[in-house]
Every structure is written in C-alpha cells, then in structure tokens.
Image (cartoon, rainbow, N blue to C red; front, side, top):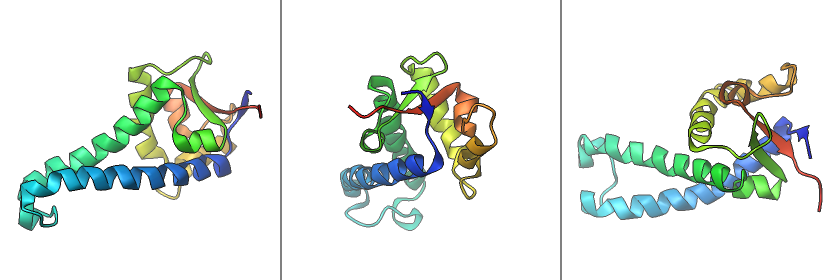
Length: 143
C-alpha cells in the first residue's frame, strides 16, 4: 500500500476527475445564468460579477478535492486508479492540509506538469505539492 504514485496514475486520475468536474461546473454555471438573464457569463454581460463567477468556479473545484481528500483521501479518479492522499504520518488529511494541498496543486501542474514530474528527482518520490503540503499519494494494494 505504500508505494508512491507515479505520474501516469496521477494524470489518469486527474482526467477522470476533470470529466466529473466538467459536469459540476456546468451545474454551477446553469445556476448562475439567471443573474445574466440567460446570457454567457462574460465581462460584457455580467460586469464585475464575472470575477465572483470565476471565484465560484475555483471554489467548486476546490470543494470537490478538499471534501473528498478529507473524507476518504480519494476522489473518484483516485478510486479508479487505486490512489489515496495521506498526511506525512499516513493519516487522513485535515481541512487545513487538504486546502494547502489544493492550493499547492495549482502551482505543481502548470507549466508542463513540472511540479508533478518533480517526484522523479525528489528523494522521497514526492511531487512539489506533496512536499509543500506535507502529504503523499500512495498506490493501494488490489483487494
């Protein structure tokens, strides 16, 4: 259970999660559309409210990851690829640690996933956001 997760599994889980998140973001956008009278949520239609809308998009994404990491250590994509996010001692992530991991994840993937590819040079096999947030992603044994 304690082998560190490599790039391929992490990326595959991210793709699975992106599909689910696309649906959640569509629901969020559908809920916001009445505020713009059914028009696209753009600066010319929503004015400064567009920034609140964009912050809401990030909040939906953040809530998805943080809640799942705190509950079980796994998002839907992580379940499919048998991955789990743990703290440095092997326990569940606290709210603060999960939020920090999410925030550091925004730094790790762009540009070119260099922060994630860092796991190949890190002495403990941790990606940049793992190292910065005091977390790790492990591969679970088949059951």
